[in-house]
Image (cartoon, rainbow, N blue to C red):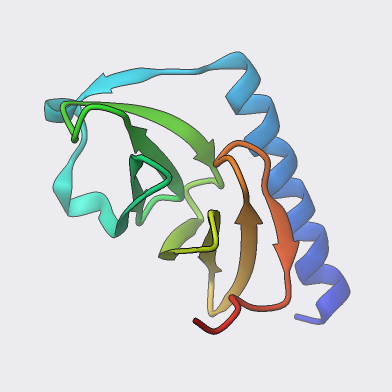
Length: 119
């Protein structure tokens, strides 16, 4: 897959994320979240973030008692890594054998970047 085709898939996936965030904000009890789907986790910006193998990014404001889906990259993606640097969140999201990087200062609006900066 060339870079242009890959970026088209990323744009389509992130467009769907925006649509799903507007139409379906959800709060789920911790019991509704399957630990087997967890792929990455971090405490940052005063919140707990959990990435899943099925492309979701969840947020908890109460130590994991309830979860809110804040991003959905699609079932074909997996959140591989979550990092925080200088009050900015960074994600590595995998799609097939490729991955791409995103950054956000608030966990709501995500922008693509070339790589996660070094510590």
